[in-house]
Each structure stands twice: as structure tokens, then as C-alpha cells.
Length: 256
Image 1 (cartoon, rainbow, N blue to C red):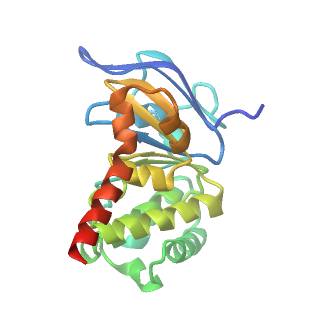
Image 2 (image 1 turned 60 degrees about the vertical axis):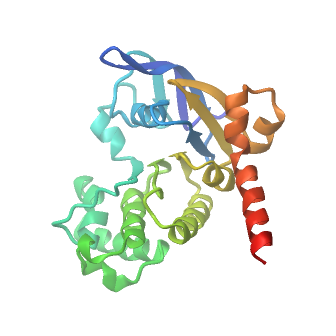
């Protein structure tokens, strides 16, 4: 059996007296797209940070395929793409400099970085002249595309995404989500994405993992989870896209 891209076994994380993640076990296979859903404070972002080495578990183990035993967290993070909702572009750097920052830390030469920047701008559907612009000169959707390009710059096979499209308008969010899902398949990525939007999770992910109060309470494909015996709160969460679609159809029919 192939080693999973990510494996968590009995992971717990505390912030002071608060148990943010409790005995979480999860395996993500290479090439999977997994969505982490749940309410605020359910442990989604903490789980991502445990994978990325931004927080150290108080109990349990986290393994990332290809990582050496005891590898320093900052070196691990250079091999994992991470996309934030807030984007986090450096305002004093150009688009090209933002995209090239991790390759530069890894010792790539200037010519290789410049070529990578050109390729990535095309990959995320941004024009080449955007390379010299400052982040402040870009729209929110353009900045998020640059954030995706930066996360891909060092050619990672694992992408972690924390509410990556949540701050965008609906049309931009939908387009960027579809574009990223296509990139995921084209580049053979493994993706774990935190989202509050169940519709987004159903449309983009192969698997949905539901967290409540720091615990993983459901894990499976959207169809499997809807047909399984899950607790009422989880079922209501999973059924929300269908309820919203039905209400939308009714409203549009009434307006016709």
C-alpha cells in the first residue's frame, strides 16, 4: 500500500487550557482533494497548522510523505504550498518578487526564478506584464491568483489552503475555485482545503472531513456522507447546498 501524502494519528493540540484538536486521525492519499469543514473554532485551521509544522501537537504524530524524521519545520514548509484567505503578499515586493521568494530561499538562480514566474503567471491566467506590479495595484481576485502562484513556485506536491477564496466576490470565487481544481488535477497535487462553504466543498473536493469541537466526526465523499448514518448536525450541514439550491430555484421561479 502506498504511503499517504499526509497521516495524522491521535493528534491533539492545546492552546493553554483550550483543546483545539482532540485525538484526530486522518490519512490523505496522494492526489486527493480533501475539504475540511465545520463551524468557527472546530479545529480546521489548527489541523492545517499541525501538518505544516506551524503548531506542534501535544499528543500524537503527524507524517508528511517525503519528510525526513525530525526535519526542521521551516524546511518542511518550503516544500508545502500554503494559501491563506488574507493572501499575505508582501506589499513592498513586486508580483514577481512575491512569487519567487521561496525559490530564492531555496537557492534557485535568477534565470530559473524568472522562468518560473513567467510560467506561473500563465498557469494562473495572469498577463506577463503583471510581474512588475505591486500587490496594491491588483484586484482581490488577481492577488489571490498571485497567492496561488506563490504557493506553487517551488513545485510542491502538497497544497494546504485556508479559506482561500472566502474574501472574494461570488463570481470571482467560483471562477478561481474551478481554475484551482483544474490545476490540482493537471499538476497532480494533493490538496487539503479549509472552507466554511459546504457548496464549495461539495463542488471541489473528493472527500469532506467534518470537524466539531476539535474532533473529526465524519469523513467521506459527499454522496457517502449523505447516505451514511451521521448525527443530525452533520447531516444538516451536508444537506445545506441542496436546501440552498432548492430555495434559489423557488425564488427564481417566483420571479419569472
